[in-house]
Structures are given as C-alpha cells and as structure tokens.
Length: 369
Image (cartoon, rainbow, N blue to C red; front, side, top):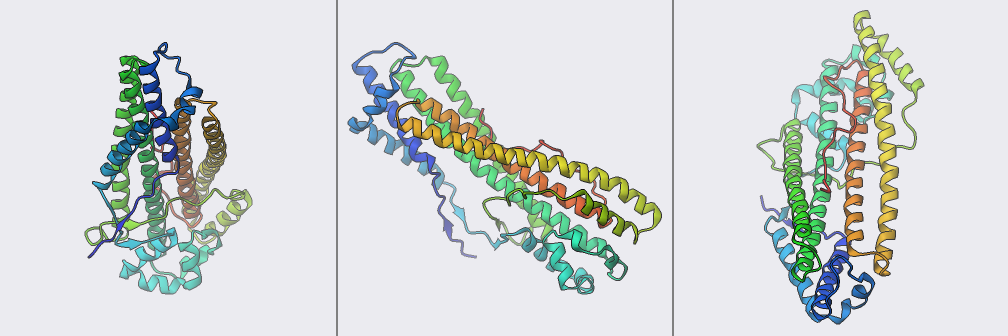
C-alpha cells in the first residue's frame, strides 16, 4: 500500500524559541564586545539589539534546519485506517467478530448505537434476556473504548513530549552559547544539558508507550498483523459540565438487579458503589486539571507578551513553556482516566465486573526535568 507522508506542523511557540536562540547569539556578541559580570545579563538591552546581528539570524536558521533535519529522518506516514471516534472503533471491533453478528442483530440498531456511543445507561438491562452473548458484546465495546482512549492519550502525550524536547534543546543550545562566552559557568551548562538528557529519555519512553497503545488497539480490533497503524484524533473530548448523577446510578442499579440472580445482584450493588466513587474522584481530578490547563495557558500567553515586551528573560519563557506543556499532559491523562472510569461504571450497571479500576493520578506523560 502506498503511504502518503504527513507533514508535522511546528508548534506556534517554536517561532518564539527561535528568537530565544537569537537572543542568546545577540547576548554572546554583546559579551564579546563588552564583558559583563556573570549572571547579570541585561535582557532588555539584549532583546532590543536582536535585529542588529545578521549572524544571529544565520545561526538561528542553522539551528532550525538541523532540528528540522532530525524530524525528517522519521517521516510520518498516512495510517492504514482512520478511527476518529471511540464509537467508530467499537463498530470496527464488532465487525471483526462475525460470531457476534446474531447477538448484534438481536440487540437492535438503536441499542447498538447507544452502546457504541457509551450511552449505556439508556440501554434497558432486560435486553440481556433475549440477546445471546450479551456480555460478550459489552466486553468488546468496553475493551475497545478503553484501548482507543489509551491510544489517543498516548499519541497526544508523545506530541507534547516532542515539543518539550525541542524547547529543552533550545535551552541547552542557549546555555552552551552563554557558557562559551563566559556568561554561564560550565556547571550551569552541564545542568541544562542534563535536563535535556532526561527529557530525551522521557521522549523515548513516551514513544514506546504510544507504540504499545497502538498495538493494543490493533489487537482489540483484530487488525494486528494486517494493519500497522490507526489514525486517531489529536485530543480527547472535553470534560462534561456535569457528572453522572447519583440518582441515575441508583436507577440503573435497580434495573440491572431486577434481571440478575440474587447473588449476582448483590455483587453488582457493591461493585457499583466502588465504581461510582472512583468515577466521582476521576471527574473531580479531570475538572481541576482542565481548569489548571486553562490557567497555565493564560499565564503562558502573558509570559510571551512580557517576553516580547522585554520584561522577562528567555529563561522565564522557557520555564513557563515547560510548565504549560506538563499541564497539558496532565489534563490529557486525567481526561483519559475519567473516560475509563465512566466506562467501568456503565459496564457495572449492565452486570459487568472490571478486573481492576483506574488508578487516579497514575498516568505517565511529558517530563519537564
């Protein structure tokens, strides 16, 4: 199959980082012409003089070309299959299992749509009385949705981690130039280089996690060995304004207990409370993280404005860039955890029993260190 390369769009903040490197060049030339005390660079004056150094522009272009070349060594190719929503993934997984054809037919189109879209509370549990392998249909749906969310989160986290590495590379390059002209000590340069090394290590880890998440999704879809990649959206859905109400959970619990044997009904009742507690904790964490991300974005935008106005140094900007990226990763992971916790709750209210529940705050992601 012919694969069409996809161009990776540069983050908007990279243009600012190029200016950061330019400031480093300007500061270095200033230091050569007029020695300054170590650690006391006049950033306002350096920023003001950036446009006067033609060699600085050449250095920036050279640095950007080198980094672009590194990116081009591993071109991104078009995926074999696009699954832009979790419900599309569920339908694909059902199609890959012909043994479920009869069960899905018995379930009916309307209930198929509700389950595929995650609207399980709208499905009357009594349908299990006339649907063969009802639990298998649900198992495939919940496993697929979880695998899809994990893959989307891992892919988004990797992109942010790559952005983090580019920012850290810019910081390390600036530190090298400052140390070369005596404005930084070799220890300070070594510390910057060490941070870059840690970020590169985390990028490798994130890449491996994204690959494993893709493989897990392909296996769930029964496409492992047939397709090599699945096209996914860039982000997960936003956190709902309101969580699932306790009344809706109690109504669902009552409905499912009515169609289960007594022993199973008692099990579901206990498990449902545990699932609801974890869901509520996941929802609270996701809301807090989403609000924090919006706050960090505002702070980052203000930092850029102040940097452009020569009120903050390049290091202030780089530090805030790292913090903002980390906040974005945390938001992605908490959204993923919420979606998984919600799926588990819905599954329990249809008689399912998850092997384990999501662990709040245990997700990986980009590292600023």
